[in-house]
Image (tube, rainbow, N blue to C red):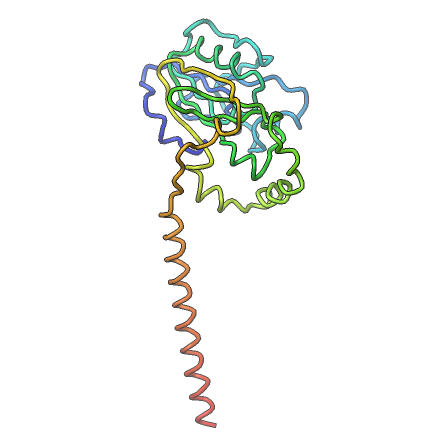
Length: 236
């Protein structure tokens, strides 16, 4: 989860469900819902290759269709980095709205997959004007760029996360909801893209300012070294 600070509406008395908690459930979750897996490799991919889940919370496993809960059994549901793995988005969200009154949703945007192309991600998503648009990845030409994507995927596995750290506001989307929202299948890629994107330049300028400061310090050290060398040459 990239924006935990956006979860603000959980009351002390709320019963909270978390769907697909990965390796680190939200501290406020009461029940964890996980899809059944057949082997350890599938389980690892399912939790996004994070550390193995260690928890005392109750875990409920299901087959990926009907949630095994009563209508409105929960007050709040957390669904973070799950929906991009779902092929039948409308059915999944119908179940989520059925079992909870409100919740929090978070997922990567199309730009993230066009860089890294995670094989586990099946769907592109974008919330716009009260409608969640979705598009199956298979409907796009992304597979044609697999040779390019693999380079960036390997860089991420090697720990190069500076791009994500600097642009997480643009690469991911997360929001709370308190009424069921509309769902619509996208007709073209523009439906799952930002309509008016403005890159946060503050991080860039901070980095630039930092690099300038480092460069100045290096230059000062070079000047001092030159002085010492000249003094030694003069003495000799």
